[in-house]
Image 1 (cartoon, rainbow, N blue to C red):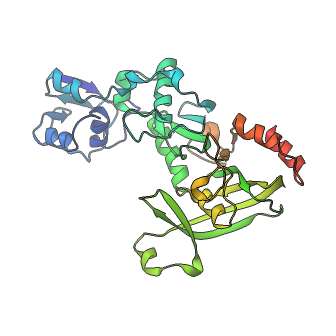
Image 2: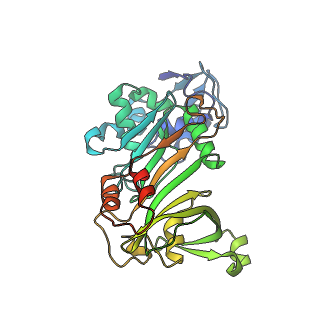
Image 3: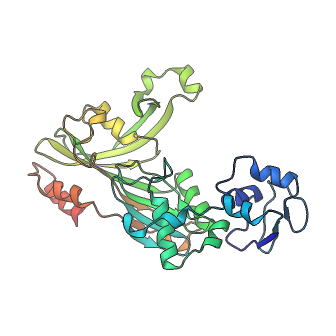
Length: 336
């Protein structure tokens, strides 16, 4: 028999979600089977998974030590902090704001992968912010995702409050999310342009296509196969066959920026999947560089703040090496 007390970080969530975090390696039905058989009880009584747990609740496990250890999450033990090197932009009691490098996954796709989530755990363990036991209560994790070869701002929740509030800000589109990208072709700078269209993703090829409203298939849209997207963009500077663009995302769908500029005939430089003629060793030039927080949030320390992620060296060096035909002064502002 083993007993655990719910602390304030774990309080307020469903009992089954708490147990699934604790027994990360267990089969899908393990938690519910143990609840039905009263091998796991809450405050001495049989409990259902949909109950909301409170601080001070006692969870009793009538399980062998072997079973408990077999299913308890311990993958953090294999993470070495120095293997992955995102930079921390800001940190509060509840959130960690990270500048993700291109090439690093936001989340694992295979057990052997290294991801931003691994970095968060490794960093907090090294700092003393979490322990093996506290990971059973709340597991810090990212609130937004970037594609592997997209660099820039990733927000992570360190606490249950941070996870909930951070995820809600992205879900409700309360944040100003700004990207910089380098596109093929020289385009005139100007005012912001609004985009409202649909995106069609082919899961087999992992490639998306932009569909303008006039060409929409109503049946496919109603079936959820075509997803609406919205964004705004402006061209900052152009020269030597490329254009630096700034994008404000109003939706965040897979490959949205890459697919849209490809639909204009101006794919991102290095993005051969979407039509660029030449590749780079690290993919393409796309960086989530600015996050504008709303004036009022549940995360008081960041309310009204603007967070900036400096450009990766490869991106900034590329910009410095271009002889800009127009917009050079604004490029200097981007680089400082």
